[in-house]
Image (cartoon, rainbow, N blue to C red; front, side):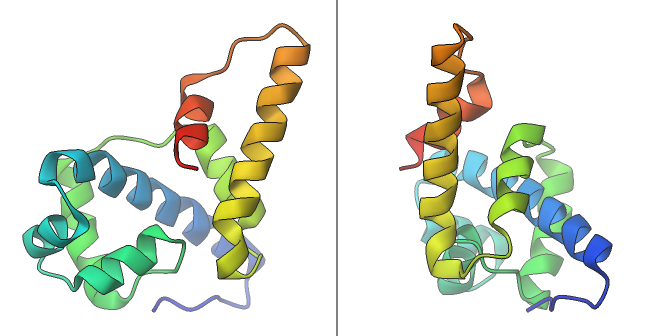
Length: 129
C-alpha cells in the first residue's frame, strides 16, 4: 500500500490522484459487469480492487495496473468529487463513504435552498449511497 508521507501536500496530491483513479475504475465497472471481471482484466486480485474502491490506498501491484489503464480510459473526476475525497481522506476508512454521502446530501440541500441546479458530479455522488 502506498503509505502516507510526512509531507501534507504530498498526501493531498496522492489523495486527489487516487480519486481520479477510482473514478476511472468506477466508470469501467458498468462495462466489465463486475469487480471480479475488471480485476481479471487488470490482472489484480478482486479483493484489492474492492478495497481500493472502498477508499484504501492502492498497493504497488494495483497502482502499476491502474496507471496504464487510466491512460487508456482517461475519464476525469470532477473537482467536486475530488474535493469530497480530500475532505474525508483523514477520516477512518470505515467512515469515509458515509461521511462523503452526508456531505453530498448537505450540499444538495444547500443548492436546492438557493435555487441552484444539482451538478452532474453531485448527482453521481448521491447515486452511490
